[in-house]
Length: 326
Image 1: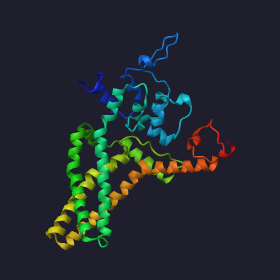
Image 2: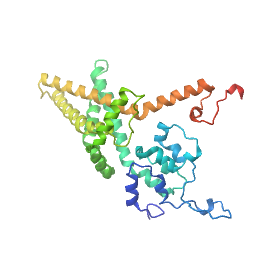
Image 3: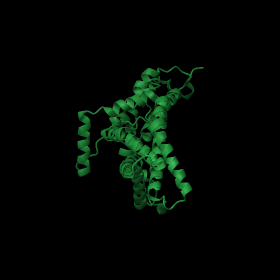
Image 4: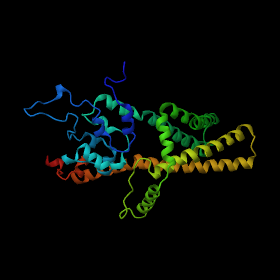
């Protein structure tokens, strides 16, 4: 039995889904369009079953639009073509637009949803392990004198096992689940061009004067992301892995000189601290900043109209009305 009820040209779809451009319009070309029983027949012929119907679902679900435009109410801007213009090269390849489009066939939606599933699973597991290592490491370093010896021993072994899992097993898991995107990831983070240095220069200017210089576009594999990934692969994993093994041998078996062991522990702590700070910045840019903006919008909406419909803040046609006035 075939995987999907319709035959898909997966080679072409793979190429399109790997591009950092909004894919929803092109995915419609692979679809079957509106089914016969969903059509509204009129005397004139209906042309373009797979065309955009301007429902705006793709615009509403796009994370780039949510972050940069918040809400789009003007109807002629709620099309897949408008979405492509708004997103440009900043597409996150989440494929939410494909899933939300009523003109894309179900098999196409499922294929797009699973296209990066292995990569996302590895990313989620890696993030969880790094956060767990940070919490257990901070506990061992600062609170070991306040906890029972048995609990400290459990936390120490959990810290070591998670470290070994991250260092040895996660690359293998990535290769097994999605070697296509593993090689793509390694290729992208290792390629640095003139545009990357221009991006970094624009970022420094933005940090110095955010009103005059806008934030450079957060395209996929921008220099900030590349630097973070290179740090994780080339610095964090080998340095923390090697110093962790040395501490393991020194603390449990006494094979390491005490003064040298103290130096190794210091190096381990310094790079762990750097990793924690970079992880916080990563989480801030990806989640915390958007949550803060959402919270401020809710507060502004309540102060302005005594309601929580913060979407009205971005509508030029909507008017605020006090609840007491009905």
